[in-house]
Length: 58
Image 1: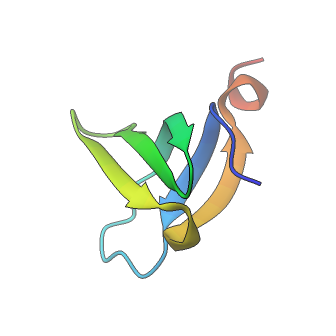
Image 2: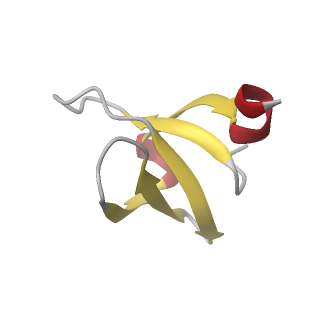
């Protein structure tokens, strides 16, 4: 299950960007790119879970 704070990647995306989930509603998530000043909204079905932000920074 995708939750706020998870690090995710968008499946089949050409760029190798990692996003932080900032908001989840119904079947969509708002993502903030870690490498760029970019925010996007995508369906949850397009996401691959990486790690939690807190796990990386602790």
